[in-house]
Image (tube, rainbow, N blue to C red; front, side, top):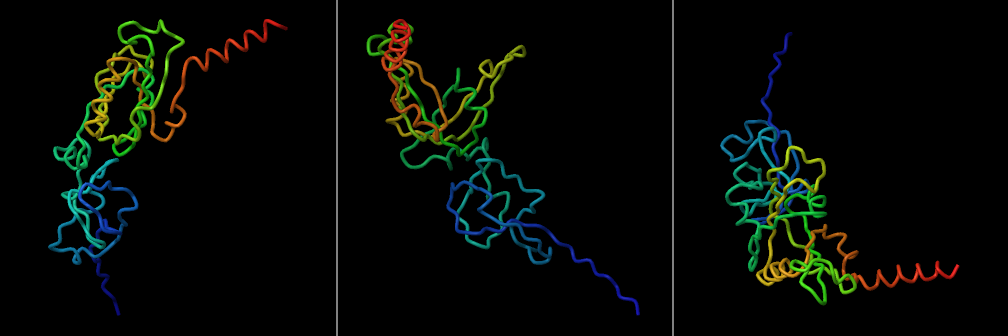
Length: 226
């Protein structure tokens, strides 16, 4: 006897593991992949794994339940029209921040959903923006905003001859409460502000230039006695 081989069309779909909320970040733990018969999803709203586009920092557009199939319509990727609206919580607003100096290097590895902190360097005597670093002994660096959520990383124009990361232009959009917006605006008017990944902010909690100068002076004085 000859047996006819019947090929059943199949498709790989993304199936939710747990409940998700509107605006929740999509990660690899949010879903699992399943290979099922195409006939099982006939008439259902879904997007096959090979066709769905989920970028780092993507958000769910609506509430879903365990076992639901994920469709492209359920996914909001960074840069899409509704992404900012889904990203901010009550009391927050998106804030556009241009990154410069050392912060550019830190920004190279940032993705939407990451958290950053802001370090402000000020002088007890002068406005650093207007007067520069003449008051070396009165400088203080401290974290002024902790764990701000990144909504978008924007790569701008860059000099074709630029060799260093600092020459490249980057900006980020972060979610901030109004009080933090005012704090950041004020800090940029009176001193230098740098951005650091939130996980290493403890290194910058509060550093005074006088502490460093005393240490350096003490070392020079000790060497002078030898």
